[in-house]
Every structure is written in C-alpha cells, then in structure tokens.
Image 1: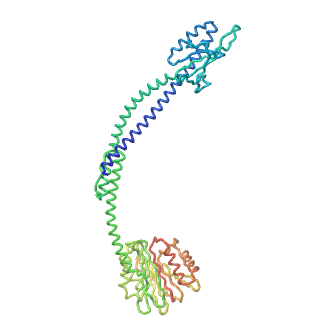
Image 2: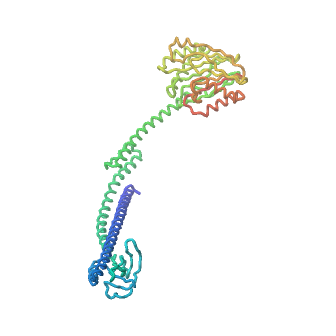
Image 3: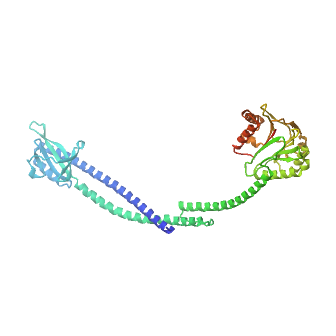
Length: 495
C-alpha cells in the first residue's frame, strides 16, 4: 500500500469517526430534549387534570347546595370542549351513571376501563379505552340533604387523553429532525475539513520519516500547522540532528576504540600475563584494569642466575592518561637495566626522569624488590607504595612489612631521596609475600587503613589450609568483584 493510499483511508476514518461522534451526540441530545419535553407535558396534563377535577367537584357541590343541578350539565359542556378532555361523568354509589357527557350512557351501569397504572396520592389512574391511553382523575361528589348534612353522592371522573401529548411530541421531533439534519450535514462537512487538516501534516511527517529512514539525516520536515503535529515535526528534526551528531561521534568512537585496542595490545606486551619462573620461588599474579587500559604495572627482570628484580607500580588516575605514563615508566625501567642490582639508585633515576613528565598532582607509587633465589633474601625499597603482606601459612600468621618512602613526582628530589630506605627480609619456606596496588582496597570497599586490610588477609588465612588454597581464595574473591580502580596482585612463595 502506498503512503498516499494510507493517508486517504486515514482521512476517511477520521471523518467517519467524527461524524459518528456528532451523530451520537445529537442522538443523545435529542433523547434528553424529548424526554424532558415529554415529562413536562405529562406533568402539565396531571396539573391540569387535578385542577379540573377539583373545580368540577366543588362546582357540583355548590350546584347541589343552591339547587341548580341543571347548571352541572352546562359546566360539563364547557369542560368537554377542551382538546385534552375526553370524558366527564359522575358514578353513583350503585355504580350507575348519574351524569355523562355521552347522554346515551345515563342511567346505565358503570363499566370500569382497563387500568394500566395508578397514583393514589395524585388522585388519578392511567386507563385504556379502545386502545387509547387516558389519565382518569377522580374525586368524591357530595350533596346537601334536607338536614343540611353533606352526603356522599358518588365519584366524579374526568378523563384526559394523551393523544394531544403525542401530537405535540411529534411536532417537537419534526422540528428537531430538521435541526439535526442541518447540524449533522454541517458536522460531516466540518469533519472532512478537520480530517484534511490533520492528515495533510501527517502525510508530510510520514514522507519526511521515509526519507530520513533511507539515511538522509540532513532532511528537515517542514510543517506549519501550529499544533502538536508541528511540535512533533520539530522534535523529530531535533532528533535527526542529534542522531547525525551521534553518528559522527560513533564513527569517532569506533576510531578511538580501535586505537584503544591497539594500546591494550601494546600494554599486554608490556605487562606479562604470566610471570617468569624463578628457581626456589612460586610466583602468581593478577592484573585487571577498570577501563580498557590502565596505570597499574608489574614485571620481573632477570639480573643473573640467582638474582631477579620485581617491580610493581601504580600511576595515579585511570584510563589513557595513566596508561601513557605507565608505558613511559616501563621504557625508563628498560633503559636503566644497568642499575637493576642497585635498587636505591634505580629508584632515584626513576624519580629524576619521571618528574620531568608528571604534571602537578600526578604521581606514581613504586615498590622494587631484589630477589635472591639462592639465599631467599629479598631487598625492598618503596616510593609510597602499599605495604607488602607477609604470610606464614604454617603458623597462620600475618604481618605488614612497613617501611617509608614517598611517591615519585610528588615532592622535590632531595626530600624524595631522603625518605628512601632498603628493607631486607629473609623469606622462609612456605611463607608468602603479597604485593598489591590500592585497587585491592577499593574492591573490598574498605576505608584507607591497614586494619581492615589486615582483617581481610587474616580471614583468608583462617579459611585456607595451605598456601595453594590461600592463593586460590584470594584470586576468587578478587575475580568476582567489579572494578572501580585498576588492581594488581603479585604473590611470591618460597618453596
């Protein structure tokens, strides 16, 4: 189906819907008007009937009192001339007609009409004579006897026809029909005009959407209907503008993602997935970044047959900036290979060079560990890095190896070098050293104090029966968390 066909059918649907709505509205209005008029006419008929029967009863009583019974017939003649009055008569106690506008019935027995309804409070019945519905109003008739007392003579009746109401209602219906036909015709014409005003902007809107759907995000829908449809078109134009902007950003983002992937690949070459094996030591490591790339660093560099250098560092910040500084840090480590056997000198050179590139507020925490696989001795020097955790699984003991040092690039050269100090430790068999970055604290949602971190390590020692189980539990607790910061863990166990 073509767009044009859709809009033609929509136009007719709207027009028919509005026409039906108008028709229903007029139908309900007519129903309400006719019901109201009918109720008013019946109410007027009841009021008139009650008035006539009351006056008739009073007139009869006065006539009997004055002895002018013949005048009653004249009164009935006047009453019967009214269009709504059908019958006027008096029925005696013995149920014979005493008086009747139909003279042929005088003296005959009263024949009660078929009763279809009654209202004793209003003194009337609804009766039917020869298929004609009548309102029968009644009132007792009294006369004065020779002793001057009121004596019940019989019942007076006045029957009013409802045909006059039907005639009046038919006249009202006819007038209303002409009005309804006129207004309905005007409404249908207006409905078609309104449907055109609605569907024409919609047609432009659908056409514009079709063009935009084909990829032309520069196309603008122009509607000047000064209503919600124009507002919808303006919002749609705004949306396509944002979509075009988003498309450009998406292209740029894809380029950035490709570049980040390249950077990630480079970083994976810098940071080993598995540490090199060292004789008499069992090593394990865990490294995750909070973003595609990060600023945590760790590596092991061989010095000779029995000596190796372990370096773990944490660049302040996250993402690309931290990654660039980390790459630079790695390059500096490689170029200072001659100083691997002199940890203090190596740390000084790192600070001297990195301070040239670190902006104010940026810093790097560094820990260098010189490992001797033959003796089991480890010389450590820290530049503000997290304290290593010493764990003795045999004795189920835990200790932080605390020593000074301030981060690289944060203070002047003299102050930095004054805080450097070698910490030497003999790692016994089945003991472990855990090196880590501050991401471990963030994973456990701990405040930055060693008490909570110590509790964490102690709980792992308590639930782990061996070094292998401790290592497994530590990595499992780390793996299951979401990372808000880069995290690195390096463990060394003497075998």
